[in-house]
Image 1 (cartoon, rainbow, N blue to C red):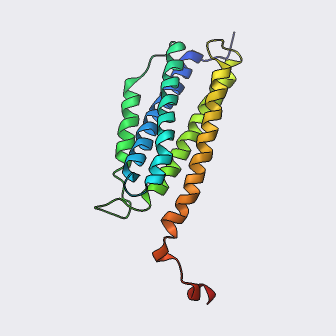
Image 2: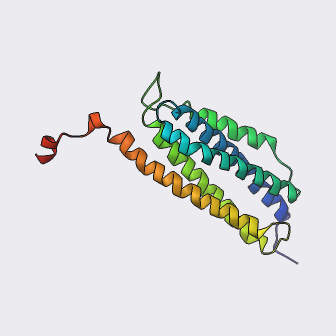
Length: 181
């Protein structure tokens, strides 16, 4: 006799993977949206985010392959929910009604960073399960974790740069005389 619930580990893993797939969908859409929105205003930011957006899309494709290799059905409604959540996030009040707020890139970088943190946690979970499940490739999961760590480092550098861009623009910095008083 076991204290194990009726639901199998595969059922729970399926829910987990589909939730991560929805998050990955949101992440791809958000990263691409940020790169596109900043292309004219801040080309350097757009150029730095675009490769990360492409990697997030590759990571999503890897997650989809892993999900299928485990014979977990993909729940399309969760993917749709991720897409809708990303689009709804664009509608939030940001202090500007007509044009893009200078705060938007800062918040979007933080959101992307949180998403990559979640993705890395998912890879770590799968990596731990790979020790007992030969359907999961530990070497591949290690490489996905390394890539997530590089993405986090880049996003953090961009976020730190954006603090200055957002909150300390030249027109808002105190003059030398004001800072001495």
